[in-house]
Image 1 (cartoon, one colour):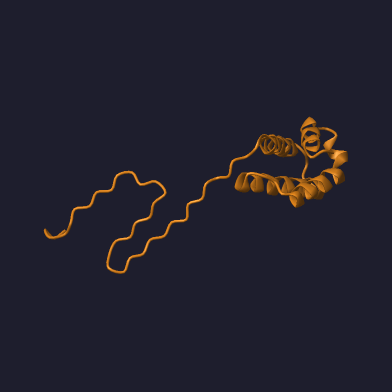
Image 2 (cartoon, rainbow, N blue to C red; image 1 turned 60 degrees about the vertical axis):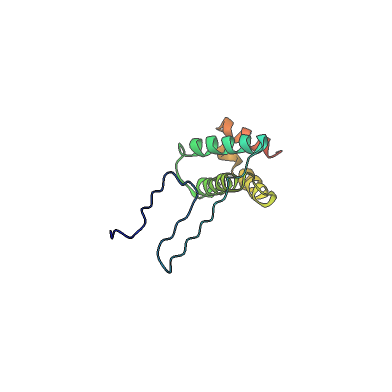
Length: 117
């Protein structure tokens, strides 16, 4: 370092961007995780519990389709703070289709109850 260069010290800089040099550019895109209401929290917990229960079943097309739909629901709630009506409808349809295998799990009843089924 040359003696005429400034001394820079950066402490903690959460959610920040820095750029140094003549043509440097810095961008930051910080987004807050949306707050979830009580019903979204309950649905998220029930979805996670049902996914854990599904892991105990032998994989087949119906189980895979349900797990994928549950994973998509979990991701949407985590990302946006809620599950949209389209997502909820898809989950209802998949749960209805999988009733035969789901009768084994109380967690399926919890998800269905939260969907108004």
